[in-house]
Length: 154
Length: 154
Image (cartoon, chains in turn yellow, blue):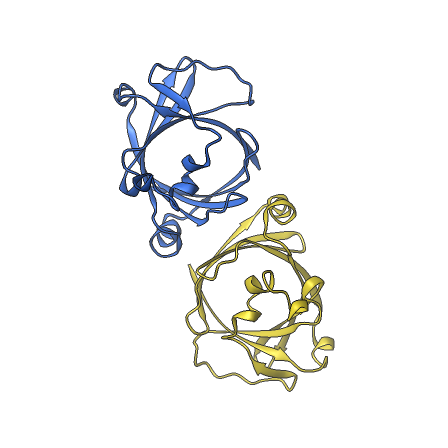
C-alpha cells in the first residue's frame, strides 16, 4: 500500500501550458464510490489498476497494479462506468516540486486543475502564479465524481 | 481475459462432504454491481483480485490478477463492502469433471451450492446424486448478491 497526500487547485489562465508537454490519459472507474474507488488508467502504452480508500484530509490510501494494456482497453470499452475521463496531463516542475496539471476533455471540457503530491499534509511548497483556489476537499473535483456529475452539467 | 462458463446447483444432503477436503476462502467486493464486480479473495496464503463483467447465460468475462496477501488483507479488513463472504470450498472429482462445493458461513450460514466449470454452455456432464435444483440464472445466489442480501435474511 501507498499513501497519497495530494492537494488540488484550480488553475488561472493558460500560462502553465507552455511549461510542460501534455500526455493523454484515458481513465474509467469499476467503482466510483468514495469508500473504495477502482480506477483503470491508460497512459501511452501502459495501463494501471488503482484502488483507493476514502480520503482523510488530503491523504488517501492507494494501491497500484500494472495490468496488460488489452485488459485496460476492455475495461474502458466495455465495463467501466460512463462517461470515461479523458484528460491531458502536464507535469510542470516548479521550485523543486512537480505540479500535475490536468486539462479535461469530453463531458468535462473546460475544467483544468493542478495537483501537487506531498510527503506530509503540512509540507510547505511554493505556488506558481497560475495556481488559484484550493479544491482539495471539494468532492466535485474528484475524478470519480466527475463521471457522475461532469463539469459540463455544473 | 478469460471467459468463465459455470453452472450452479443447490446441494442435497451432505453425502458430498466426505468426498473432498475443504479449504477456507475469505472474499469481499470492491464493487458488487452485476455489470462490473471487483472481488478480493484469500485462499490460504495466496490472494487474487478478480474482475467480472455481466453474465450472459452461464457465461461471464473474467480477469484475474494475483496480488500481495497484505494488500488483500487490507482490502478485506478496511475497504470491501460488508459483510464479507466466508466459505469453505470442496473440490470434488466426479466422472472426469470437478465440482466445487461451497459451504457458506457467517451471514450466509446454511447455504451450500455446487458449481461446475464448462468449456461451452452446452457441454454435457454427469450429476452426482447430491446435486439438486439448478440456480445458475438466479441472481440471489451470486456471491456478490449474498453480501447485499445474505442467506440468513431470506
